[in-house]
Image (cartoon, rainbow, N blue to C red; front, side, top):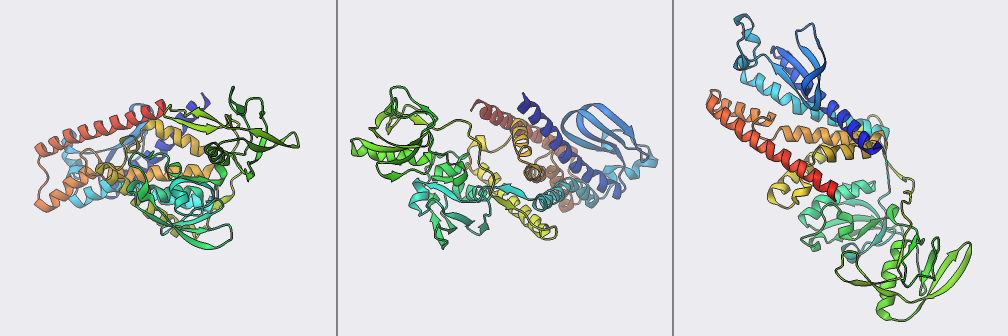
Length: 454
C-alpha cells in the first residue's frame, strides 16, 4: 500500500507542478496582451479552495487534479458589457491570440530547461557504463566483459542510463551503430553494434537484453539461492555455496554458469565443480540434466540451481554532474536531444515501428514511474519531471483541435485567409479533436492495464 500511496502522491505533485506552469504561461501572456482572465484553476470540478485576486481573477484548486485551465473573457462564451469588450480574448489581434496559446507549451519548455539545469547542478548518481556480460548480437559485434561504453554514435554516454537511451532509437530502427569503447586494457576502440540483426519481434521494453548486453552492476554473484528438487544439483550443492569454476573454467558471476553448463551438457559426461562452502574449497562431481524451459518451448542443460532472491544492488559508481554555469548549455543541449527523441518516437508510433503498448503512457504508468524516480533521489525526480514537462509541451503542440496546437492551426489559417475560421468549421474540428483525444486516452488506459497485468 505504501507504493500505491506514494505513486498517487507523486502523480499529484508532478501534475500540479506541470499544470501550474503551463497555465501560468497562458495567464501571464494574456494579462500582458490586455486580455482579462476570469479564472485560473489547477484541477477540474468543484473548487476545494479559491480566492479572488485584486485583478478580479478567481484562483482555485479543484477536486480532480488531472489538469487545469485558464478561463478568459470571451464574447463567444457569454454576453460581455461593451465597456469591457476590449479585454475579451476574441477581440485580441491574431498575433496576440497566437502568443497567448503558445505560451503554455513554451512555459513547459522553459520549466524543462530549469529542471535539467538543477539536475545537472545537484548531480545524478548512476552506474558506470561497463559491460558485465555480452552475448548474442553484442558478443558477435566484439563487445566483451569489462568494456566501458564511452559513446553511442555521436552521443557521449557517461552512465549506463545514457547508454540505454542512446541505443533505444537505433534499436527501434534496427540501424547499426558505432560504439566508442575503452576495453579492459585501457585501449580506445570502436565496435559496430549490428542492431540490424535484431529480430522483428524483440521486446522493445528490454532493449539491452535483446541485444545481449548486460551491465556490470546487474550481474549476480555466483551463489546458490535455491536447488531444484530431483535436479543434478540436488543433494550435491547447498544454499549459500559459491561456485568458482566449472570443468576448469572460472566462474565470476551467476550469469557465467548457464553457458558453461550448456557446453558441458553438449559434450556429455561429468565435470568437476569447484565450490566455496563455509570458508572451505570443495571439488564436487556433477553431470547436468535436461530441464524444460519456463515457457515450455524446449529443453536445456542445467544443474537446477537459482540465484538468491531480492539481492540489493551495488552502490552507484558514476555521477553526471556539472558546475552552475556549465549546467546551462548542458541543459539546453539535453532539451534539444530529448525533443528529437520524443518527436522521433511519435513518428515511429505513426509508422508502426513502435509496439502499441509502448506508445502512450497513462496516469498509472506515470504515477509508478514518478514514485520510482523520486525514490532514487531529487536529481532522478527532476529528470522525470523535466521529461514529463517536455512531453506535455510537445503533446499540446500537436495540431489536434482542443489542444493548443489545434488553436494555433486555426490562427495560422486565419493569417493566410485574412479572416477567422468559420464557426461551423471550428465545431467540426472540436468533434474531431474530442474523438482523437478520447482514442488517445483509451490507448493510454489500455497500456496502463496491460502493464499492470504483466
